[in-house]
Image 1 (spheres, rainbow, N blue to C red):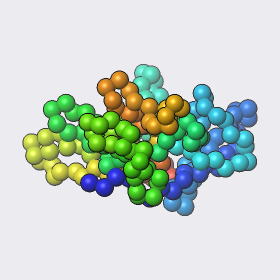
Image 2 (cartoon, rainbow, N blue to C red; image 1 turned 45 degrees about the horizontal axis):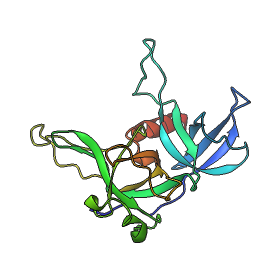
Image 3 (tube, helix red, strand yellow; image 1 turned 180 degrees about the vertical axis):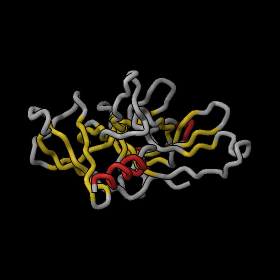
Length: 209
């Protein structure tokens, strides 16, 4: 199973929020259109008129009258500016939900973003996984291959899609921060197509065309 893919920085065009001039929003290209993005409130707010590298931290859905998010409608994407002093890029073999525990996990290793692993640093990871680390999707809304009892449900095996994700960097050693139990949590995606709701982005942009 390959790990990661060639990395292309995700660039957002920063503009003033028309509804709230004291805030900024971002626009990232998807095909020949631009997708509206909202910067996380507790993160760096770039200056309007600039361009910054960002990670996608999740979808933003409107809320229904009952107070629940309408997951079939997209308001925009939530993003955060990339800071390589705080964030580290990890190549993964793709998220998959399978087995009796139904855990949505991928295996990953540090990457330079060029389809090759940084072997020296990877070897510093936990020995039981021989340099590889289990990665959870966190709240990114990442797509995953659903392989829970595929034969029972009459489905073919779905191959996970290799990609890259951002993980919080441990300032003490430069490695990804591990959660209790040894798993690392993805905090951002590098591509719109890695979202489970990527089809909503496509639908929204087609309507706006």
